[in-house]
Length: 155
Image 1 (tube, rainbow, N blue to C red):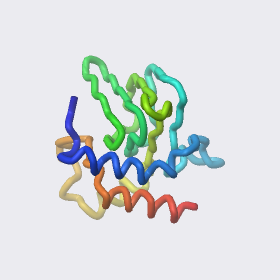
Image 2: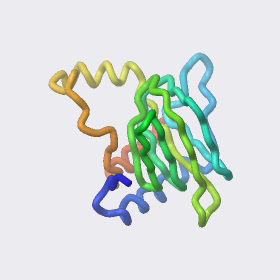
Image 3: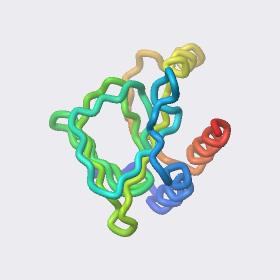
Image 4: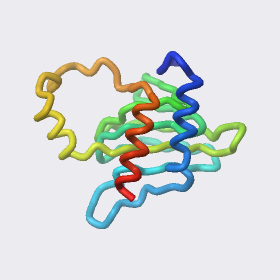
């Protein structure tokens, strides 16, 4: 198992703060658009999804339960408070497991639009083409605050 943060307690607090955004599923696209900027995935049972392909790159934050991602021989397990970047068009096998205490699996997907990625490349060209060291950002109170602020602005 990969450790994403030095303080698991902080990661769980952040996941709890994001729970209001993941109380019910919200994955339906807006008319003529791709997935919403922030999507919530909620399940009351274990889910297995073979060959999932996301149309856009985004940040996945596990709020409750566990997510297992399999790409060929690579297997990664993410728990509440963990996050990772899922690249556009990556084909993965996913297993979502409910939390044994609450009986729910909850996760958020924060979509990175093509326009956002292009603008980031324009503003920070020094990072374009560099090998990504990790696709697992550390969930922090600051990132939580940014996600909540973004969700509030979208409402």
